[in-house]
Length: 398
Ligand SMILES: Nc1ncnc2c1ncn2[C@@H]1O[C@H](COP(=O)(O)OP(=O)(O)OP(=O)(O)O)[C@@H](O)[C@H]1O
Figure 1 (cartoon, helix red, strand yellow):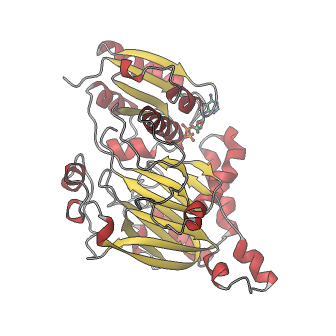
Figure 2: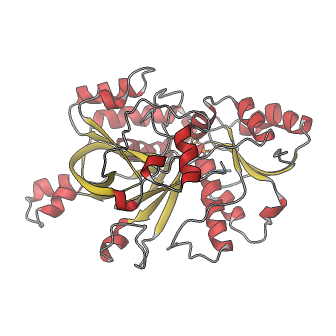
Figure 3: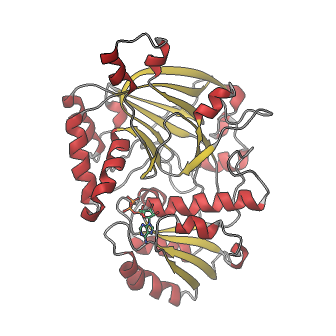
């Protein structure tokens, strides 16, 4: 009964190994034909085109049973960012300063044809293209949290650390992400690797090696809102499988921490300062071929919470341990002594936290080191704003 009949499908011929069109012709087209699904195919010609099409009022989304993208995580990010923005526009909500994020009522599907394909891998347990197509044809969906990134400088001016505070000026919404947001090591790789896109997925190895040798640390202050009763344990050993109990309760239970979510009143802020190699907000475990356990193997797909992974800046030897752990099939980042993981609904990040604490009275030699900033890697794309607030929301249509 829930099988889609008409789908709008965006295909990115540029991502991954640049073979999305060939994969589509070989696997997707015959299966969609067999299942009698009518496809309106749009092959993208530039970055941001999917976002522009979906947010253009000239396209009637109600004509479709679902929106699908064939590409990598960046393509998927463009699609759901476009769809949430379009939903805000249709509801008459200010898209730059939304009082809340409305949930789109049209489902989204992803056919993996990118470099990492983390979202497809976490949703389906595999990046196998036919598996994704069959899920789409059968109209199966699972919940997937989406996290919103806000400009924290705007928040600071309003003296308001919480994007969910009522009756106060809203911070500016910058972007939504579905897999991970990473500052430091992975942010530097995202920024650097764009120059080598002609190498295909190998560009990540090349830039990764360069940044590994650089071993840069970044000063920061992170305020993370934790469950007061300590009920949210990112290392609880519970893996999120299809519609797991925790996610089901979060979807219908409206938030309370018993149900997976985290009510604002039940949390207290923890301030963490220091020099970090990497700071990551993982919306999902982020397991993929390159990193079978991902950032946080027990992170849930749709419980309204994300896992904040903090990697302290230490020695090259420890960085090597980090890389070996990230690519290991069995080892977890939480086992490393210089890694901390917190499960939260929201956190605030301020670069150069210690520099600001010293009230500007720092020696020039230290100050340039202290003032050094990285970029955010937001679902594989570079975000230039540094100081941010992140808030996770439950979504049920992905
Ligand atoms: N025709 C195009 N030409 C150039 N860029 C495009 C085109 N179509 C889409 N894009 C952009 O390409 C970027 C990268 O695509 P995508 O994320 O799908 O591939 P990837 O980076 O190789 O894979 P992954 O994100 O899984 O590692 C997207 O941000 C998208 O905006």
